[in-house]
Length: 256
Image 1 (spheres, rainbow, N blue to C red):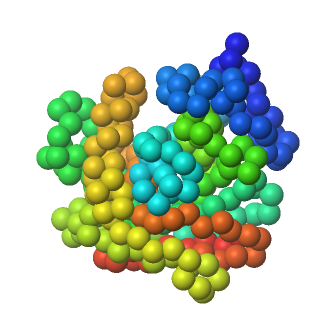
Image 2 (cartoon, rainbow, N blue to C red):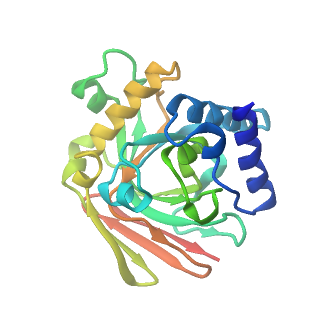
């Protein structure tokens, strides 16, 4: 009963907008298969309620973010259509519990990612590269999370914003990009493509292999948020966040 109990704890936090205790007392700190089983329950419930999957997010790819959260490996979560905020849009008060924000390279896939998965097929599958903001959130009080907690909580997913500029991969090398993020006009985070598992394309390859091994491979048209390029930044009501990723452009969002 640990999987249903953990899913229910996270569900109640979402419904009541009240962060809950960690779920590691139910599923353990590092039991990867059980943590993903909890995530699958939560995803299935959203699908049953009419949700539509539009892609995946990769988390915990940056050493800076791993250090912030005390973990040492990447994870992934599911992106739903209702999680997307338009570039320059507004996140309403009370939508999220404990939001933090990070800038990322996003990929839009033009082809399915099936065997063989190698450098050539990864590059061939990318139709567009896009600057993105991921607004992460945690149902766990105080972000007191272990690896098991964040995986179960759909990889601490919240919302995401895609920039307006979409470039073919031939026009930009994701590993070489530089990122700057501003909070209310003040520089709050810096990073680079190499902070994301050495190359955001490496993160995409990791996800493609993992998703295929789990029987749910990446598909054409899906969005993949490849992971943070620098440290997460906590946000507050009224804040405006803007990020620039060299070669890709800018992306922004405001918290009402």
